[in-house]
Amino acid sequence: MTITDPILADSLEALSVPQQLRGPDGRVLGRYVPAIPGMSIPETGLTDAELDAIVADSDGWIPAAEVEARLNALRSSL
Image (tube, rainbow, N blue to C red; front, side, top):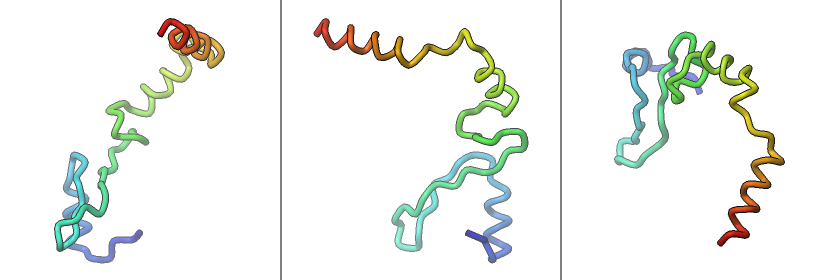
């Protein structure tokens, strides 16, 4: 969607935190998350460099088979 109203575009650009967008009747239209340089997914609160470091850290990940085994063990203990 392209914002063609310059006043609305300026208002959105000035925001620094996510906002709920509502129509004139008050119904929720969606959520606006302002662009933050260096943050592809600003909702996480992590920079792109921090996300890359997390992905690159093999110690922080558990293989899917291990997760499945843990879930199955939990289910059988109920």
